[in-house]
Length: 319
Image (cartoon, rainbow, N blue to C red):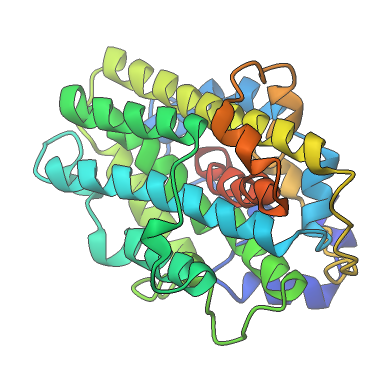
């Protein structure tokens, strides 16, 4: 939906959280060159972006049609993903091909996600949650990259963090309203970047640091390939969860939440906002863990909360 058709109130609200609307952040710096990594990522992930557009499910999410349990399990999935990524970032914080992108105070999310999971599950949350099979594959890849090829961490960190500062802010407002979460931010700490005063300025800094990394052309190509692989991991998570959701559709009533202020931001620019379409057909690996989840309404939780992860993976295409 074109930006000019978005209601002023919705636009101001979304932008108040660090410039989260993706169409507001497409400026191109004069100094950007075609061989810069940010430009290579934008061009090299376009196909993945195109595959991930226009799913009805995410449109419904943006209109506030999200179940609380769905959001809870998705937060768990993000917790495991970010814990793995930040373990590897710490391991490689002095690596010359990653060190300039080390911003733990500004960016790291696993502690915030732990607080969110505790809010939803209580003090004994660690005994209640587990990593889904598709999420585990993503986690395993992050650890492999951190141990064997740290330059590829650039793809994972840039994808996640910059997206969280962009499209993820839209989903924060949608979830807060639809789920009636406290205005003080409980359950949404993941989206709160206290160490960043201007999301736009920080994203420009991060992109500049990334473009200044001393990387040869083959390494840049591998980073772009890894970025597309990150897309695929998340599509697999989404496909896995979509299968769970299909089984539960007849058991769970629609939440009946009205549209989120008819928010019609140009979320179509987010390469992961519609992973359902791209993931269709990739459901053969749903496992016994998912089957067990089917017996309880909470089984759909992973499905929608990973939509938040989807918005987070938009960063390189938005920048």
